[in-house]
Length: 69
View 1 (cartoon, rainbow, N blue to C red):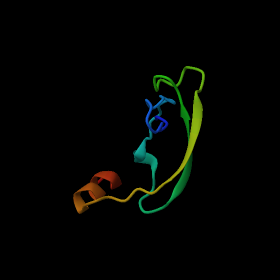
View 2 (cartoon, helix red, strand yellow):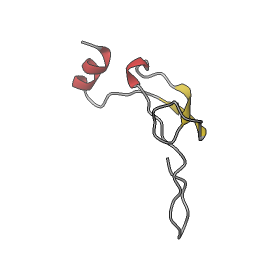
View 3 (tube, rainbow, N blue to C red):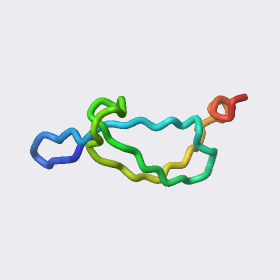
View 4 (cartoon, rainbow, N blue to C red):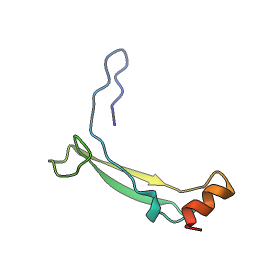
């Protein structure tokens, strides 16, 4: 994640990952993800991002993969 600096270099704010395999289809969920320097999660947190996500497959094939069929 980077901030946006108009006219200047954007600053690194941390990284995280999101495991979509545990998200239900077509249902919005609010998630809180910890930002770390290298995404290992063993370091001191650099911050937190809160977002609402909804998993919506783009095709029938993707729906089968997400559903585990």
